[in-house]
Length: 213
Ligand code: GAR
View 1: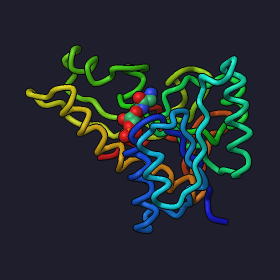
View 2: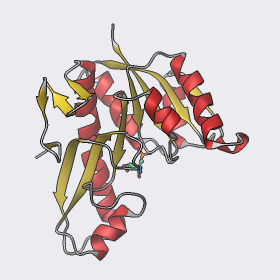
View 3: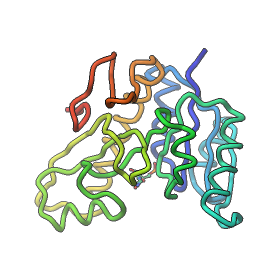
């Protein structure tokens, strides 16, 4: 059976678009079963609808608690039987309830070389610190925010004249290469999280994950 992805977004969905393009071109042997957003105005929703992909909108403001919202997402997503739940710019903190339900199936992309710069404003913080390298990371999601075991990173050099804008554009280009690659490993059942860490082809990955050159 083709590997089924559920992609969760809150914003413009350029990573979603990159995943769709990788599927169309045959680089990624998976199907997007559903795109779910917590915001009805997320640009990524129209990208999905345009391509005939099922969409779900759940507005977190309509729920009394984080757990109630997350339970509603679980109910909506399980209907599509996803093999991997893909966070692609989903800007909500997930409860332990959600994270445990999809343990080993839940993957996030984050715009920094983790463990540096968890949370927000990662490009500004890298520039502020004068870092010579920056990039993005993909990790399995655990209950620790942006703290789950690393799968892969795409580093890049920070240029002398970089701004938040220029840096975020280049990081996004790297994200668009890295996410389809990692998802193809999932589709081929080569990538898993077990009790002692992330394994690719049954072998442990280095602590920083696979490094894209
Ligand atoms: C991406 O750059 C992703 O790394 C970031 O949101 C952006 C979404 O862009 N995610 C986070 O900051 C998660 N903490 P997109 O909607 O164009 O794919």
